[in-house]
Image 1 (spheres, rainbow, N blue to C red):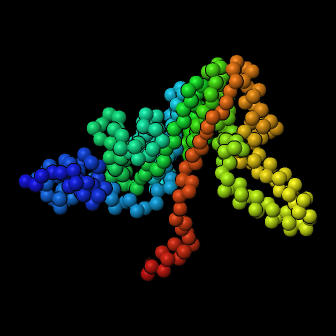
Image 2: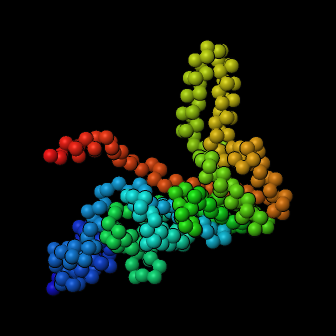
Image 3: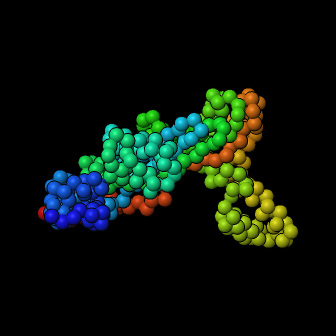
Length: 310
């Protein structure tokens, strides 16, 4: 009987895409025979995950979890929206968000973490789910926020179940004031973030390369007016201020009243909360953002199908 080494388990896992524990079991069942173990996994339906790994997974769920001063948001992808309504998939997404509260925002650490109620990892649980459901899936990303005093509040837009949906937001508020009122403020700001899509917390957080690119575009636009350079400079500065109001959370106009800056909303709320309030961070996940989705030409598909008949 061949010695079942870690490298042998790793090789079997790479060949099949099956979970670590399943690979160990397969090698034990086949006395260390690699090809026999591949067949054993295939017969059990556990090697199917590898075949599905090349398919684009841009649907799925965003899940959030909070615990007082900490919060986590994760994105778990699948190939179709249908799977997002699967109870097992929803349970995995929700537990992954809870697990991220302990592991932090490193998605690789999250994948390697022990999955609650089992003897295997979160990635192994997902691999098993792939084999069961029959679609490629991916635990794509995770972010955690925390404050020393205050709250981290979550919001899910159009939630299909508690803490699960297609847009998830976390916002961290630092304050020693009334926790309940602080949480209410956080929920309102999180709703604003979901709608207004800020890129940065405040002016100081704006990416310098993005700002430089914006300045160059604005300068070229201003020069097209034919005005003197001194006027162009003022025009650019005015438009940069407008840019800040579009991309910085604290400079944006609060969508809930349509007139007050978010910065002022926070300042005004502090009086009722009973202590100064500082928004320290936020994050917004929209399902599938940045994933290259395959676009099908429906008319071409129909024509191809018609041409193949007869």
